[in-house]
Figure 1 (cartoon, rainbow, N blue to C red):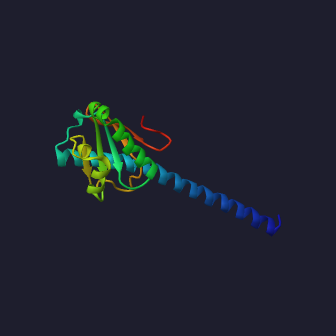
Figure 2 (cartoon, rainbow, N blue to C red):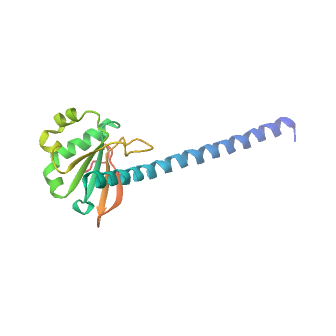
Figure 3 (cartoon, rainbow, N blue to C red):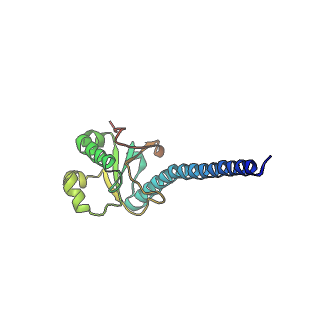
Length: 158
């Protein structure tokens, strides 16, 4: 085998190895994101329980709404809340606004009746790791967090 052929073969093997390592690292990073979102949701729920005496048996779903992130996702989440507030509140939905920078601006956007509702909560600093950029819905079954679903513009909460 000639040296140039051996060198080309070696480069190819090294390149495949590097690509494999990069793939593993990226896969681990994305796998961690989902766990971080779930852990952060649990942390926020615990903050609600400790700070507000919140009882998980009093709700069927908790929807976390970030103030910043995917603009279309957040807009669709707010629109959904505004259009379906009565039925959502009757179905024991809780809406939690995460890390709101300007509560006065939010009150003007959603209205004082919703803003001051007993079904609206605010939490700060409980989201860790990857920032919450899309509304996140947590189903509550038998007083415990169950499945978690991230909203997107393509997947309307309806």
